[in-house]
Image (cartoon, rainbow, N blue to C red; front, side):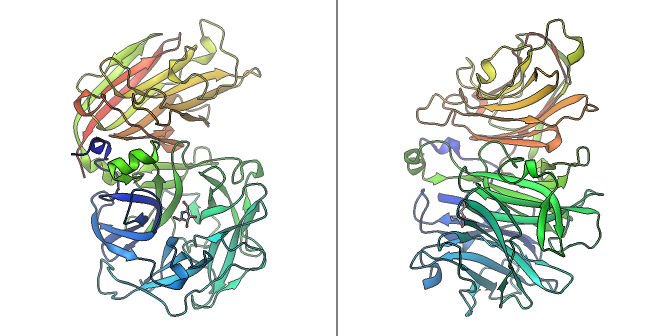
Length: 530
Ligand code: DQQ
């Protein structure tokens, strides 16, 4: 048994061995969810990239299949890189992907199923027209990749977007086609943002303004009751940024609602370890689902020793936050709850300043936790509010403030030398405005050497009418996924406890602030393995 095998997850998607990165071509076909991923079949480090392939009927239990696409043509000899699936109105799926050619040129290619009667779509055929697209004038040979799912507009033409850069400006190119074979470049970009560098894994899709359903990628301007989401993965800083806006079918361009929150400036899907994500529309449950790649935060040597690297997030449903209108809400797909077992509940607990309360019966490394705190009465404090700008990296959970840090410790050892804190900290800016910050603190997650100890986090948008602060924290051995305020912000951490493992990993409630905090409800479920 491998020393590091305890770090394998029990209900997150990961191949049995070797390296994985971006999610590719997720789709639903004839009763199965299909999931492809960037995969090195030969080693636990990036290289020799192919498309791994698995299928599932519930997005939680996966059946691995043979590799779907491997480098076997000159146009993808150096790797079958990221891409997307499009399901035509008649139900036929196609894949568009980037090939890194024998000369390291990035080219767009197409593959189709060999046998449409096979619901597992085990064999894919590369079309003779490949490569379908070469880098256009002005775009570097290695700056042209990751085609999106195509969308159909009312003019009867399919459109795709491809990420690129021009100088240091990140851009999303658009190509159109009537037959999916002959593509022509649109003269203007879908969108661009100066200084953001190469845009990888662009995603572009509508979200409803009026209901909870997801929208098909091709639901372009069927009515006005939608917004658009544009996402780019920034090669510069390895973060996934999204921005909400409108799509002008006249100008064929995306217009952000708030230019100060454009790609690279504003919202991220996740404030922890999360990259190269991709959504798809699930026609069965009418929802849009987001997958994200979660890399390791230990060393490459650790990965080689343990024989694998990376997991995928629990798939998340995505909807517009109608409370704020200015961000998305992400939530683990409801199917995850089928793994919930034994449950511990605690209600109405006053956490005095300095409190540290072990949650009895809640130990374990496979947990789903939901906790709701009462939003403290900030205007009736016994002491003056702290006036400062706070960033999670300033001291982490060990700080002592007025209102916080308070929250949860997970994967905590008996003596607390190992612990991962997920917490809130409320501070008041000199202008009198209260700011609620949420953080995930890895600084004491592991006694091991050479692991990342960053404290991740973000300020959250909390409308005044909301009188609670909530966390859902999913713990699965080496991953801690946090959803704040019903999914308004997310933070994913990779952690490598050495003694806080299995039944020796505990859950605690803590309050390091001087003011008391009311914990309203805590629910902790043990999670079975998938
Ligand atoms: N990973 C792929 C590229 C993509 C990058 C190569 C993002 O297609 O741009 O493995 O992580």
